[in-house]
Image (cartoon, rainbow, N blue to C red; front, side, top):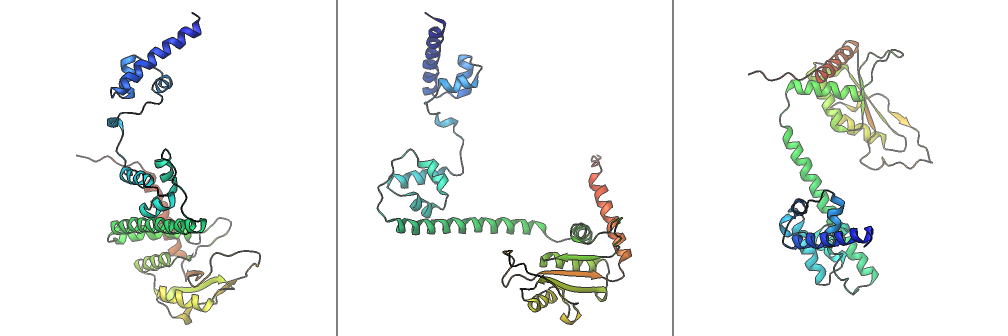
Length: 290
């Protein structure tokens, strides 16, 4: 008997033993230890085609969905119909039922497309509800904010979005630009916390020339609680006809620019506070003393 033939015979004997142990309900680790197999690739080849025992399968959150999908497939349902009822993706359904026979086509392509659209709408609604719940849960975790927390938040917010001084361009003045009403509201609340009088605020809008500038001014005046007459001249950005703009429609209000008069000292306080935050975050956390 040649060496190759001998190795093949040994493998077949080992495979018979491994399959017998697998059918007795042993896990891969138990078979490996029992037969003294040190190579995982050989171990998987020995039991190839033999399903794992039920007790080794980990519970999965989608087990119920998978079982229901297989049940519907056996009833002759299509992927579209299963998706419509269960609200899960077609890719998941395909994995779950791919070993089952395909049902006979009973609908026209138009009818199937209509079912698919309805199924996708169900999926989109489910995903949107998941997003809403996640955001709602995160918002509820914030709770009340202390003055110190608002102070630190405002410093970080300004350093991310505000005008900053540079060695090559001295700009020791406070100017903040943003299109998010929430960011503007936090910035104004932060200025109030620092005791910056509203009389020192100046505002003006930056917006595309093709948008409704007057409506944008009214929108921002309401956000900051200021008279529209107090706003400076709106800056209009020229529209490039070759560019397809996404920021269009009634929800587009451009950006609001907030300048603070006589703000060199305030700017230095902001910059100093920012460096303090960076230093505190970089310092090692002291161990709790008991």
